[in-house]
Length: 151
Image (cartoon, rainbow, N blue to C red; front, side, top):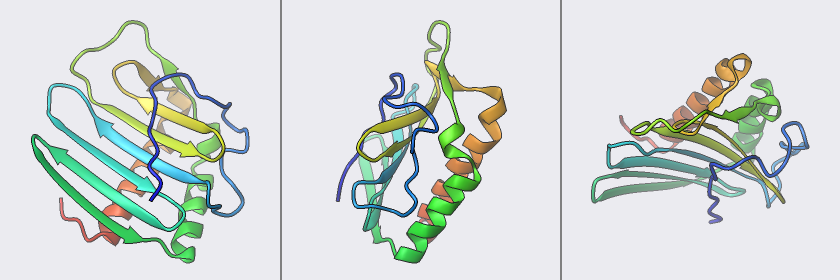
């Protein structure tokens, strides 16, 4: 299973720069991360060519669930990312840093990595908030439903 990391730095490629492949290739992956702030908890979901890994940490406890992704599911995920215009969403650095704020990152990786972030040091441009939220909720719900994870 390939692991990707989401950086909170500027994107390493421009939005719209072939962010999403026509079909899910072996080098394409999507990562979703939520964490930070005063709570000692985080959630990482990684979608790779053949599987999805869901990792939830709370304090010293770690819950990991992995499941296989079918061709149909990968096609569904890619189509959903395109319907939310993932390659057109922009995050921007905020002035100063807000401490004790959770961060949410969605990263797409092919040969390069592109991350969109909403959190302590960055936020989503207002015009992109609905699509960003749609992507985040879709990926979260997909992983929870397919992995039979209860909230």
